[in-house]
Length: 442
Image (cartoon, rainbow, N blue to C red; front, side, top):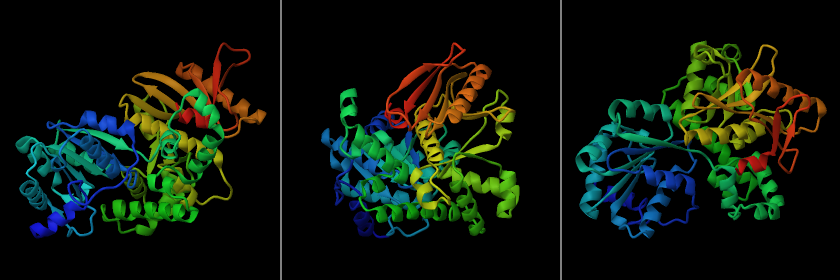
């Protein structure tokens, strides 16, 4: 590529060029990334495609410009720009940076390599920038395993990571103009908040989908996102030949969220080996479209061998891709709680998330571990009004509480409007009940 062609592309993604878009703030991530950025380490921003990684980086630079940082001192290279010839190599990166340095003459540059997993040998270029040029580098990518493998071999001790998720429910409220969330404001806005929860249950939290008014357009976006993740981030990257079988596995998993899935049984349904099922499932987890949760056990070996529970990265995917005979709000609610727990875990490396099940089939949706301590036991139930349902959930919580030595017991439900804490008859234990929308705003 000529210098002029490179500069034209760079100009379209940078504030010193033609880029100038209104972007919604995401303060939790922005604050964390600002703390991580350093000349000594690369800041790696991971996350599912379309979660908002590029927008957050642009916001970071825009906020720095407000603090009187010169425009020339930042450069975003978006490797998904179709004008870049593929495949790109580390040599191309040196050429791009040389064009930027020559034409802008930055004094204290921040370089962003957006969706960098598309470039072979990128990690050596990053190491060169950090060690030789002392440049602040931010790397974004959609594949946690790919980046993790490359980083661990080439950038050992020279990177810090943060994972970006689609919008949380609290962020959705902010995007919709509900920013003050004190007790009085929540009471005043409760009807609107619950309506927006219904939208979140149906359409999820991808930023572009949240801001889109058209139902048809929301559906089209979600279908395209899911298909792009499977084709671009899995099929092409891992050279998958059995595409139909991969898609079949994805369809089964997304239609059975919040349930236990035996890979042994899945191999028979799909018609492939156990190794292939495990490999395909790992790929889908790597690109963050699915999460797998293991059963809690004090034996690490038993944990690893346990059947996994499956969750999808965004409830909107279940709405447009799941094969369902009726609306299963209980499973969706559990999946939403799982997403929020994963989001919290991404900011706390000391947190573990499991489910629990005993030989009598009593089950706890989430066992939250903090360090070596079981911090909380959580049941999720869309409607707790049914006496038999309530009895079953309480019985499981009490049994797990005794087995795991944890008295912090919580039931998250859609059936109530106010939080309450009730003592269980005949015991000294108390169970907290909290509405789903209120728990999501904590």
